[in-house]
Length: 98
Image (cartoon, rainbow, N blue to C red; front, side, top):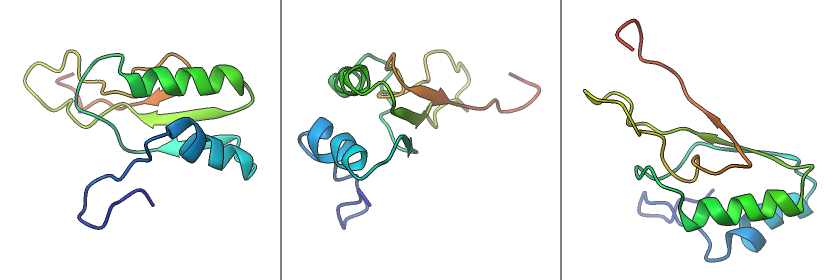
């Protein structure tokens, strides 16, 4: 669990070694994540994720695309690190209005 006790995410400083690397070392080849940032940019975290998957091509990392698509103008609502290039970002539509 990556919750820090106060309800906030407590991500490790070194995601490549202490998060992706730990899971990979334990045998994980599919890694599901339902957390992320509300910022639509290619972040350092997205870059680190891309680097790790590039070095471990047998690992599939999945990310929720974001939770901000219910705004009046839903453009650019995919949040980092789902903005990475080497993961599978998963989202859904709100309904007929989209």
